[in-house]
Amino acid sequence: MSVDDTQPLISHLIELRKRILNSLITILVVFLALVYFSNDIYRLIAAPLMEQLPKGANMIATDVASPFFTPIKLTIMVSVFVSAPVILYQVWAFIAPALYKHERRLIMPLLFSSSVLFYSGMLFAYFVVFPLAFGFFVNTVPPGVVISTDISNYLSFVMALFMAFGISFEVPIAIILLCWSGAVTPDSLKRKRPYILVGTFVVGMLLTPPDIFSQTLLAVPMYLLFELGILLSQFYIGKSGKRKSANSENESGRDTSDNS
Image (tube, rainbow, N blue to C red; front, side, top):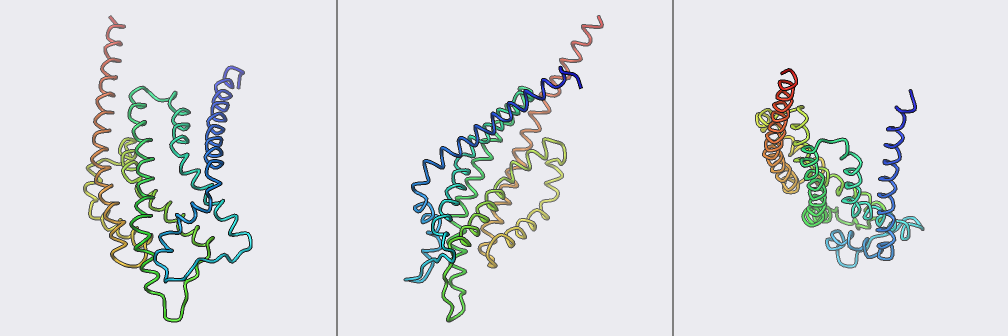
């Protein structure tokens, strides 16, 4: 490999390091701004469970250091979630120079929409799923059993649900990318609607408490997002197809003029 060949690679690595450092600095700044309120943030996250517990019941800490480290751990995770738009922008700034102009116009809305959908999934889990799920768990406690949830275990549980619902709400983005890449087509997805509908209920069964109401609360939004993804993918494919045909016509015109 010659020196000229290694120059682009080195410049890409330098640019990648810059984008990673910018993301880490953003997370650090957000964390330092929120760390003072770490206990308040944990209290906010624990509110859906605390509101469902019997009067006088509290959460517990089975580890000596849990009361300190668990809110800090939550604050770090919140800092990453809050910094997600900046992180996505850094990803965009790194890959944008390698894209065509029409590709940049199409991908930028996807990056913005992915953030909105992920946050929407988390909010849906917090305000809709958590109260129903914790209410179900509390109301099915056997007689003589007292609920005393460990704060670390609770954090792991809710963060797993946050991630599950946030990722589940990215269904339209996934469909658009699959159709845009040519892996599937909107028409083929339309023919698979019955299977997709059953699949959403299976996912709802795996991610929610074992009651039909909670499963439906996840399955119905996922299916509606699937339909939205099909609708938007047709728009993206149409735009991409028009630009490709225009580019091919321009190239053929240039070839004709060169031959003449």
